[in-house]
Every structure is written in structure tokens, then in C-alpha cells.
Image 1 (cartoon, rainbow, N blue to C red):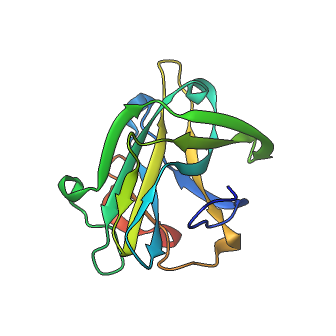
Image 2 (cartoon, rainbow, N blue to C red):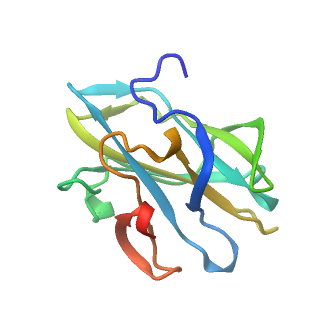
Image 3 (cartoon, rainbow, N blue to C red):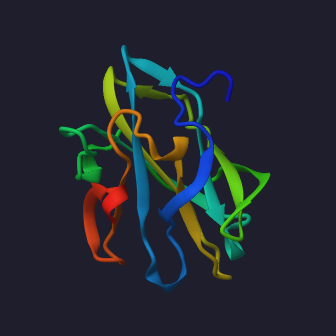
Length: 168
């Protein structure tokens, strides 16, 4: 996105973690931080995910959380944005990693989203329909952190609290 205020760069195909709400009770989120110098209103959030199966025409969950000392504030009640089953635009990038297509998602919050100065955490995931499939968030920039390291949580996989994605 040419007008992005922050970008981690394109997915690098080095590693990834489950970031999905889908079949079999799987719920997981990958999140990464961005820092802005002054309050900023954004009109769109864009991210990439590897998907398979019934994630093709799925909805998305988006969670935007304030920083809490280098990690997202763990209480979703403090979220700047918390939407479930929202419509999103999706574009197949034509790139495949690990046998899955890389999909570019775009979510447009109604009226924009105001982000305070400082660090904010962004988490987004596809939601599976009824047919099955998987979705994964990927590393970018060949694992070189920009800001704080990416984080991940999934009670399904035994990690109910946000933790460093590199150690999960």
C-alpha cells in the first residue's frame, strides 16, 4: 500500500503461526505493533495470511489494542477496535508458501479508526465458513523485528495470553 503509515513489508515465507477462527474450535491471533508519532486516523487496515479450504470467501475478526509495556493490553475490553465476522476485501497475491495461497486482506472501519500517538497492536484473522481449512499469519522482513517482536495467543493450542511469536 503506497499510502501506508506503517508496514512490516511483504510476507517472507520463513515462518508462520495459526491465526484463525475456524473449524475444530481453533481460535488464534497473531499481532504486531506499529508506532505513530501523533494521533492518526486510518481508513483501512491491510494484512496478509496463508489460507486454505473454506477461508476463500470468509469474514474477518480485527482487534486493535493499546500497548502495555511492549505487548498488547491483554484485556479485549480496552480495544480501540474489536470486530467479529466483518466483511473484508481479499485478493489472491499469486504467491504460495508451504502449499497455501497468500491472500491480501483489507478491512475498512466505518468512519476510520483513530490511533493514539505511541504504540498500538494490530491483530486480524480470517474466519472459516463451514467447509474447513486453515489460516496462518506469516513473518515479514525475514524475521527482523520492527518495534517489538510479533506476538501470538491461542487458548486452543495452550497459550491463552499474548507471548512472543518467535518462542511459540
